[in-house]
Image 1: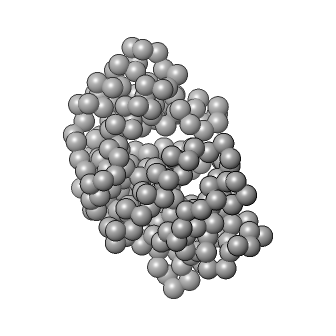
Image 2: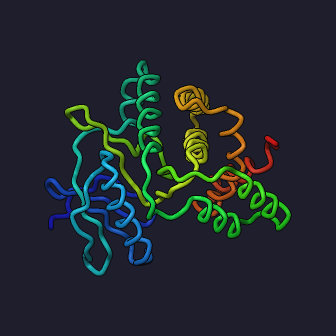
Length: 249
């Protein structure tokens, strides 16, 4: 295996290209259970028929866990938006269409989104009263079993050279409520500083999925709180500001 071409460096992992394979190498501090869970998520999503890079193997390289999957040659939607800003609306529409396609699938063996959110809210820095309120709100939300990506944003969509879109990074995949996943994507646009993109995305998602905007907005404090346990301090501060910014009840 030749790991001489770095594609991306992210928190706790480095992604390499090796011919027609993509090798994601995790830092030695990364939990074995988390690596195996990510590989299992990806394998389960493969079975839904969605366009995703197929897993080839899970292995160890120099004492570090690694997931080897197909390398997809192309550009991410994020790259295309930067290179071709005049067509940004077209790319946002592509993002929404793909997300709705993901959410049309079911995958009964995936972890449940509500369980994950309850656990994350419990781990957050919020005071006990706020945590209680968020747990109560979450329990009151409708229970669905749709596939939710969990980190659905333009840099996780790659458009292959033949125009086929592929969806990357299934480490956060769960089954649950589609509007929670949309709230997460909206907040990711905000985190990237693209407030106009966030608004355009949400308007289009609600229109195409026939979902009330207020319903997605009700998820935002819950999603922000559950996401606040990861990321850097600036991101945490931003997400926690969403928890009480507006009470949508």
